[in-house]
Length: 150
Image 1 (spheres, rainbow, N blue to C red):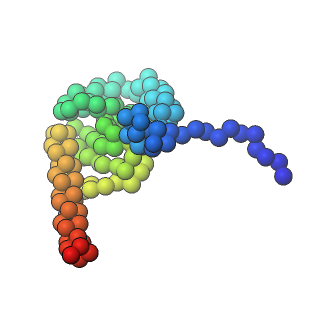
Image 2 (cartoon, rainbow, N blue to C red; image 1 turned 45 degrees about the horizontal axis):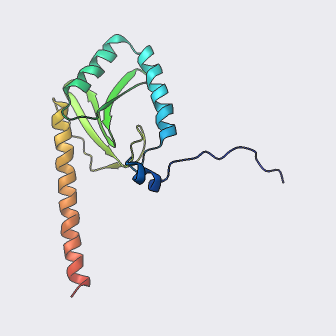
Image 3 (cartoon, one colour; image 1 turned 90 degrees about the horizontal axis):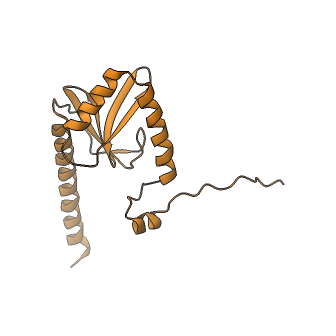
């Protein structure tokens, strides 16, 4: 049997990420590749798409938002901050919360089909959904504790 001579790709482990202060989903190699893809997309995207994307980025409250632009049967854009992404078009914004920072993939959490005129309202709505979900989790935890702890 012939063994493959391919080198195994090193992926940052959650422990290493904890030590570096990075979120557990952070993969520096994937981030470098995605940044290169984004730079290429920005060079090719029409000016009106870039202007709209930059306007969305500038309109969001808080820090740490990053731009994502891609072409898939037309040009699209979104902004993300960790696992939180704001998508849509002017006047029709919605927010997604993913299990990971990977854009375009990963399981979605606490997301509904609400759209908002202001992208900050979409983010606030997502926060409300998370708060309701976590309140329900706390209620379930408290109930379970009454069952198993005297």
